[in-house]
Length: 321
Image 1: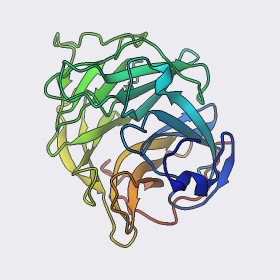
Image 2: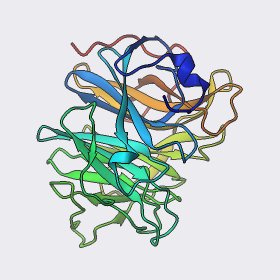
Image 3: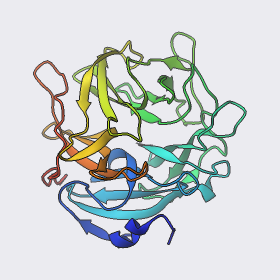
Image 4: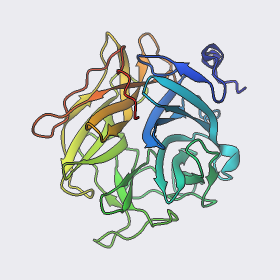
């Protein structure tokens, strides 16, 4: 068992074990940057293992039939299976395509184009892996438009096109992925990487489409502090332009601080939405002491996202079957 803190021992989590825990956090352990997906009739959360960069070299995953009972799948992707990844692997993004599952991740926290690292992609036959490096090199391994190649999100448009939205250091880029995810294609304007940075953007983008509109969400503030939060914009195209509308997720001093870096579940039957995010428990100040929470997300009659109230109670069971 890895030496990543007493929380792992306290959680008592072994591969394939089931954790029954209503409320927030939704499962035990220090985790962050949760990616939400629905695969094979199950809810899945793929989080970052929240640890020091030297130890942040593998990913666990969690599956649930109802958002309440979670099964932990250990080591679905490990740096030992990605030759070029050495440290600081984070921010999973998952898609299913043609019977395969693709796991996009950031690694090595590169600071310039001379360093090896950036955004990679791995592939598996099952949601729980094991995932193996697809390309043998980063998919995006350099800075474009000032964006550090981290915090990737992959969005499938209604026409079947896949886009990757990513970026740290206050810049957000979008690129269209090639059909086999081996690289990026050319956009209509002739570029490969288009900057779509909205006001106050810091990192952690997420995109979805609703009623013909494209919603871009992102994190603001510093990830180590209490004011980390989520804001959003709406556009008529995934390429923008995106104008900031407002903040919809933030700390509640009575519940938790540092609420940010999120993704969403959309249950099409009944049109139910959930926001999955990390936050810092009250009294915790260590940068990596983060946990995963889920709360309901809703829209008003104009299609605007209603500010989310973060809770300790979490969400009620919502079986997919």
